[in-house]
Length: 202
Image (cartoon, rainbow, N blue to C red; front, side):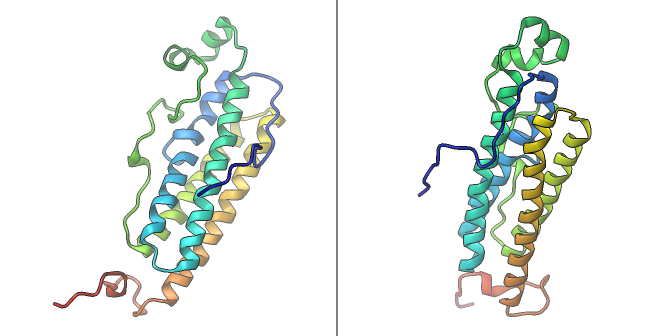
């Protein structure tokens, strides 16, 4: 069960609309390395995690990603509010506008809709945690790319915050991987690990 606090995890106060910038940032809402996929990844993977501390970490970070989804949606909303038809056309925002007006809808910067193929839940703790570390690095790289093209300080500020959280999550998943490896019945992390499977007679 979750308890929702009616505030953003980090404030967003954008004064100048910029639909072209919104198209870039939208990728962190529903793109291949975005916050929606991150949340679904971790909240799905937690069920197969055999260690309580690591399961709690997946739940905590998966929940925080929902908060990040809300921050990204707020950025996109504020960048696209009160647009004139001329701004829509001149910015290249027209194709999105025709389908969704200025509603928030999950897609990549290239216009590809979000789907469950954006994240993985394999059921093997080593596989899932390595996936999670890679996902955090890919999200960090995407935020780096956004910061290379964004000039508005009102937009850069929350984007930098989100980027910092990707680094923290990467480190926390590294800790979870070490905990998992320490609990294995074999020092060979790439060998079959029957301790992860239900014990049955052969």
